[in-house]
Image (tube, rainbow, N blue to C red):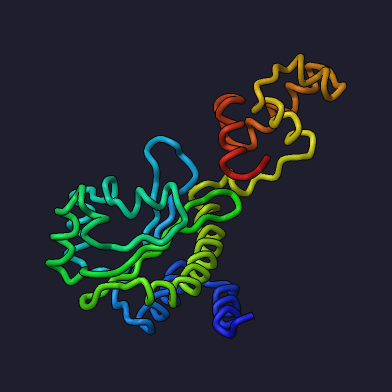
Length: 236
């Protein structure tokens, strides 16, 4: 294992706060020549009114503009992260459809950089961005730094998820029993209680008992929402 992997794993496997996790990334970013950076993650729920958690050291005025104009909803690097884990350069081509974001970012020294999306085993989406005032990012530089930044981003997502999900989504800490998972999986496949009972050789009443337990544990209004929550939280 490369020395930097050991160093990063050792540093980020400690019990840290959200700010301490981000500070570690900020220092590593500065070491390779990027004065600005950010870490963001999309919570798996709710599906509508999506919620992002973001830490950054951007110039305060630029971050205020970004929020006030809701650039998050149209930022191409964010849209990219929702469907890919490949790095993406922050250049004119990337922002061709929304040049105003790049132009205003330039006014605050946010000129060049790249973003690295990541996902955890449950599908939670995260992204780190590295930005600097001077010098565009060439392919050679990206290839040199991308493995470590991707590694740090993965560890950041793991650590941040452990801190944030229990607070924002208490259901993420739920433990379903083996039978509850079985019943919910078959429910997710569209089976009725009668059909599930036949498959598992249990009564309809027993099937409904396990479904109702799962619905209650997941703080859901019905079994449909319970199945969706369980699936998105990796509980099935």
